[in-house]
Image (cartoon, rainbow, N blue to C red; front, side, top):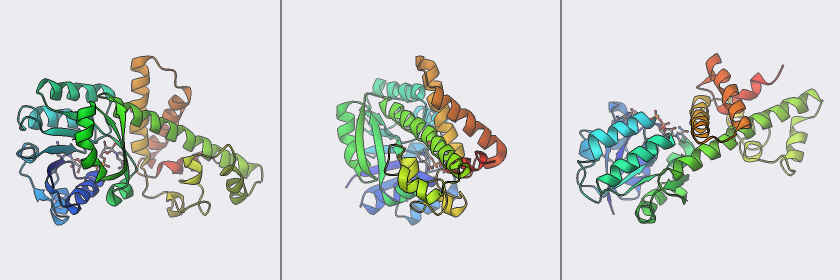
Length: 292
Ligand code: NAD
């Protein structure tokens, strides 16, 4: 079993730390929140005194932080230049490609293997150990990260070189944002045309309108599997996080000159939804703004 550090024990990191500890690893955990740290200790981790302390004497350090600024600060101030040579750095946060490349370069200059490994799957998948990891980094770094990530997920896929994991994550979530809105629009139009929602679901879910947003995360209550729609759009994947991911995708598209009209429109619609005070609600709740 390995000695593993983990920094960032929020909604996602707490479940991931518990999975690592549950698999028998010696897990040293740190979070700036005392409450989050106490929960990790209750799940079998050892509390680190600081972010830098969890990097001492471990084989790998996992970070699961809110955004690029937090990751860069932790890499610069607490990990690179401090951890033992050959310590593997695994960043699972969703961050912008430019920062992912900067921290990868920082690690490479210090001779540290590093991967960006953002996840698909929400809080429930983190707790259940069924996340999908999309990984950017060298083949050697990926091979070392794979068994650690496999403890926390059902799929671990190498996307390419450093930054490719973040690129895959934002492209995936741009599809998700756009297909969720398209699915909501179609249900709203079907209603106006007098179609029964269940009948429309039965047809579209086995026809060419099928997508994950339709069959795994149906935005209409009482139709399809149980989803946040059945709980008043409470819990699930917060609209504010969808907006964060769409903004990252739009920034990357701007940087490389890609044309993304659907992604751009999805970002505008989620901007408005979040600005109207719905940032904490599940992202499928946007259907309510598409009905008269
Ligand atoms: P969160 O805000 O619940 O947790 C982040 C944790 O990091 C907090 O506990 C915070 O105290 C801690 N933190 C912040 N700065 C720190 C520092 N300098 N040192 C130590 N700890 C620090 O966020 P989350 O929902 O767990 O998301 C984490 C990442 O995963 C984000 O990048 C998010 O976009 C991504 N993500 C989230 C979901 C989801 O459904 N929540 C799904 C996929 C990906």
